[in-house]
Image (spheres, rainbow, N blue to C red):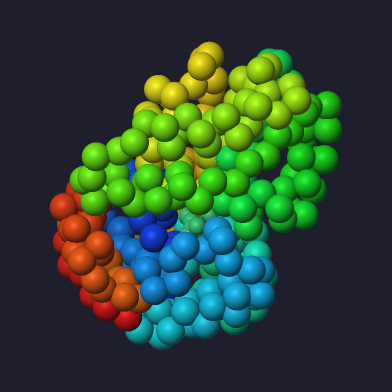
Length: 267
Ligand code: DGL
């Protein structure tokens, strides 16, 4: 299939979390045209049921692909990927890259053999997480915790609001207070919102620990899948698309511009 140079890459998340995936991808392919879609009308996903997510995400991606004709779609959301990736792939005729919890690198890097998985409630209960742990960290203790408040913290940070440091402390305590938690030395940021508040998490940690997420790996995957395709010679302004535009979304404009998303559309 021939691809036009101006065919965009589509990133999809419930909110701003996917920006942590967009940033390394943009660094890898600086002139890539970008459409960043956030399901603000459906946010947050982490407290929804599997059935709701499995119904909502493929339908939305179908509409987005019809409107923007991307060359590739990235589900820049762990919750949507761990639940709906197969449904999305079945519904679309373009390559779809998902975001899966970075359990493999955490298990590789953990010296204490205790690592944590910090995600949304919906992600940390997925059998997929158990499969990854069995495959890559069978000799490790894997602790898991879901935090909806940390998702809200990341959104608030990008709106430029003052942040309560207790939110990051509570999220880490959800892991550290479990048996073995005092030995935890690696944390998988298994929600794309969480790398956006990595600094706050590191500041809240009672002892040094490493944080890992999938952003760099996804950027390499995108570069690989598009390696023979043409790109524009100059960068063009990216487009942010929201399923509902309200005052909260409006407050994101400066942060979005920092990621090259200078135009804002409603879906
Ligand atoms: N950013 C999303 C994830 O990676 C979901 C956040 C939410 O909507 O709860 O899981």
